[in-house]
Image (tube, rainbow, N blue to C red; front, top):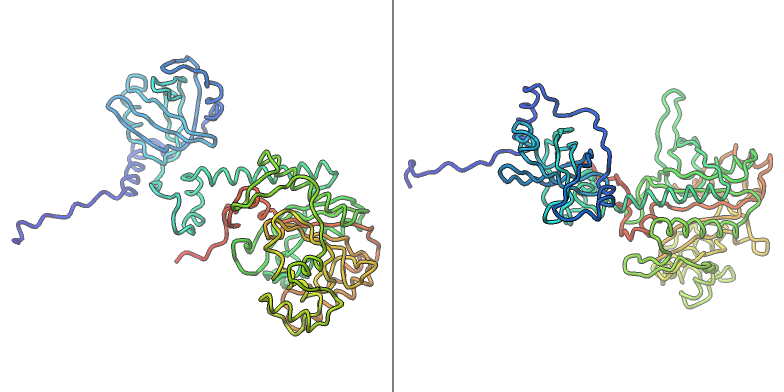
Length: 499
């Protein structure tokens, strides 16, 4: 092949460069590609409802203003069809040169998919039945430099969708629907709690002592005080201080931070609601938890009969309660109780695939047996009660069995959704349990609580009998949106930094 016969390879224009040139051309012409305020009169969904009976080919004199992102453009000579998406739905702009004028029409033809526009015009329905706005003005509100991807839904690498959630929300309406349902769930919970007479409060994010749960914390440094603080792992202890102060019903919905692993049910920061009610107990917390979830499900889903990952779940009626030892005995196929020796319990746990640490007592081993043998079988809502004292440092002991506590965990579809106690309000007992936690920390338990002397002092002033519950909001949203992973219900889940 001679040199003269070699044809240069055709190079397509860089779409980002093309759009940057359009942006500069607008600026050079004295026009702002990032326009000012636009007062729309309607959302698209409102127009669809209002003009549902408008006949094909009908033209109205009703002038409206709509705004949104361009999702498609099709030019046909002297007519251009521009599909605009707002927060509620899509609508077509039926752009005609004889209505807009030549200069304005050329500007419409120069728009790109992804641009934000505002349009004013009359409502019509095309002969093909498409509800449209016939604009007399189309104003560019924000120039899109980076083209929207053609194929963003169903990407094998879901990390791209999580990392670029802003694009995920544009390209995948089902993702937007998940988060709209999340907003409804949170709003329903707040309404329910207010209806039950609870005050919404705010407590510190930075704690000088980690407490309220067994978890590994994030540590940060306060320069002015020159001391380390922990990002909160729970809101429990500050909220119970408010009971001491005389508030009877308080709750907080907010972020919790735990420096632990990431999997489909865990994220380093997540949302919980914790609620505390004076003069109540564990039974009161069952009623509160069941009522809260049922109300949220009805408001967000319109039903208490839901499906999660192919499993039918009935959230209606009164939910079952069973003790941890009873369930462990049933599913392990032999007695699980404090009457067994530690060695016998350890053998049962290891047969179920659990690893037993030398420092664990009977209570911790029983909880491991429950996790190994039982959890996956608990599909319908069930309150698992009577947890061992060893794993429940803030719950009241049972009067007839001091090895067990007045505590429940709510399980649905094999996962824990809520944790509740009849709260421990005996300062002497609490001091001993904090001391035991400190001993566990000395022995290497990074998740053991710190010794909160101020909390002991608060209890010494007297805390009324109370019930308390904490519920994982993200897990509840997963359940009610049929989402397989916590990342699907967090707008911005934690990711490894991009390379």
